[in-house]
Amino acid sequence: MYTPNDYKSDQYVRWCPGCGDHALLSSIQKAMAELNVAPEDIAVVSGIGCSSRTTYYMNTYGMHTIHGRASAVATGLKTANPRMQVWQVTGDGDALAIGGNHFIHAVRRNVNLNIILMNNHIYGMTKGQYSPTSPRGFVCKSSPHGTVEDPFRPAELTFGARGTFFARTLDVDVANSVKVFVAAAEHKGTSVVEAFTNCIVYTNGAHSALASKDLRTENAIYLEHGKPMIFGKDNDKGIMQDGFSLKIVKLGENGITEKDLLVHDAHCVDGTLHLKLALMEGPDFPIALGVIRAVSAPVYDEEVEKQIEEVKAKNPARNFHDLMMQQDIWEIK
Image (cartoon, rainbow, N blue to C red):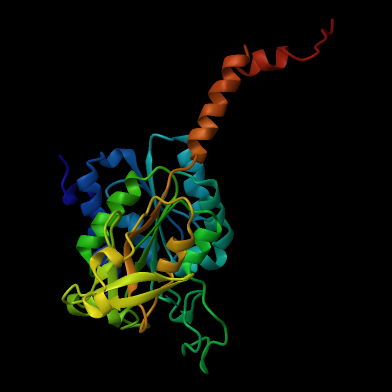
């Protein structure tokens, strides 16, 4: 049995004190220990950014690649060595700006990758420019009068690319983080976990509505497959369907009971309700945490390997010389 310490490198962790990445790093290591996969059977791939330093802090194989290209490198690694467990650690800037196309096509192909997208709404490493997930009106160095554009929502991109797994967690919520990271690793295909992360320097308090356990009980809902959608400090609130929309109800009012609430089905192939749940936001709705979607679909790297074996079975060539000799040849004397 492995412990979290088995996945910790000897490198000094160089994130700012108070950065949410510290807690997520610990959660990743705890999840790997729970999965009980040997460190030498794991590769952590990253691009550029604060979150991408994770590769240095893992006692696994690691590839610190270039800006926005982690999904492409991770795809190549997993396809070349399908038996390796591959994790991609990225940020909202790295994955959704310069790396946007690589991200959506990794999701579309359903490569067997575990993508942890640390979302702090800012470019932290380059000192505070707004990112693709910064909210409209956000004031920072590159938008001193406030941004005039709407942000990407990772869930929409994932669902639009026909993603098979999407979950959400929060840096300080270690228990939920470990749970969803384990679920992501056990899923066959591309798993995307959006991890709300606090940048102590540039976006401190960006996720303040969820920062404490008391606030999360009122402002978040933990979705669990097969269980009714209940939340609130006293577990007295729930979610019902209202036509094509959702609505918040209070148990006991107007005769509403737990049987009237929606039951979470993370395995439903139709992602319409999953997307609605993933896009809920305050103050009118709780923010959905946990595994929101987890469905089965053909896996890219497995399909490639299967195709190679099928072609090899039909082709007598076993090396380059055999291949060349299959063609029209002539001899010069």
